[in-house]
Image (cartoon, rainbow, N blue to C red; front, top):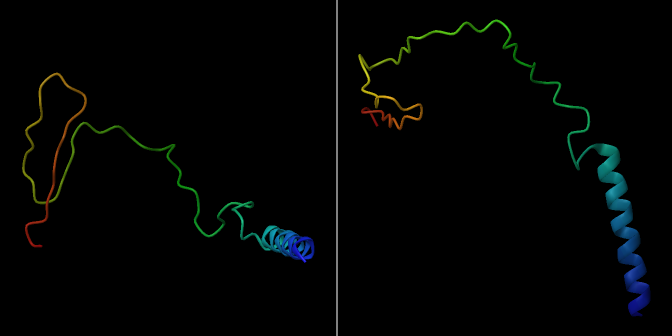
Length: 75
């Protein structure tokens, strides 16, 4: 009885894996065609950062990593 149940479960798993592979449920094999890829080739470096609602930011001197916490005062 136990061997028969194991064979049935194995066959069921094989059928489900084959079905998932054929329908694409297991992964993104063809890429996402709905979203076009962004073109980053024409980005120009800008030394000014504009953040709506902030006139200026104070950053630490001689450090590349900055911790800045923004919040929305409306919420």
